[in-house]
Amino acid sequence: MADGIAGNPTTLTGGSTGLIGNIRSITLPNMERVYFDTSSMSSTNDYRTFLGGMIDAGEATFELVFDKADVATLHAAIEAVLETWTIVFSNASTWACSGGVKSSGAGSANIDDVVTWNLTLKFSGKPTFVAGV
Image 1 (tube, rainbow, N blue to C red):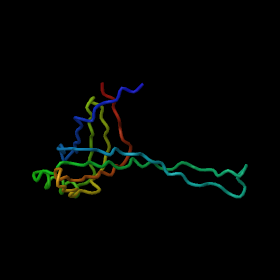
Image 2: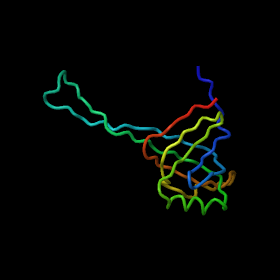
Image 3: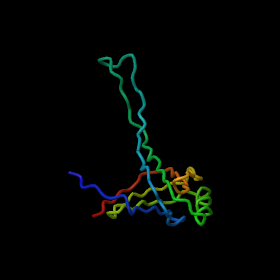
Image 4: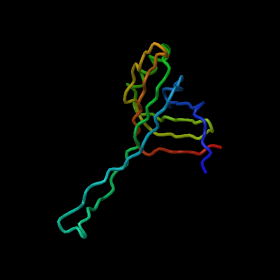
């Protein structure tokens, strides 16, 4: 049975960018594998056949509470080369992968909420996960 863990506190740190603060929510990456159709007119039993290809580590999207002090850092991060990004969850589990900033920009401004900033990371290569307590 899964015990579950709290989302707060969860942190995001880039190897050169440093700690990204004020995370409000995270959409975690979904890894995906490409499959190639290898079916032919000689395939048996009228079933298609497939061959597994490369695995895509996916993307993670972060909604941040806007902080003007972070704007320069977030703009610089989108221009940077790939770096190791590490997500640390409340139970000390870590998810890390090389990646870069795919998009960074103003999120939303609503009458009954704070102004937000969105950050999307595109991962490159195989991620590592280390279970916490």
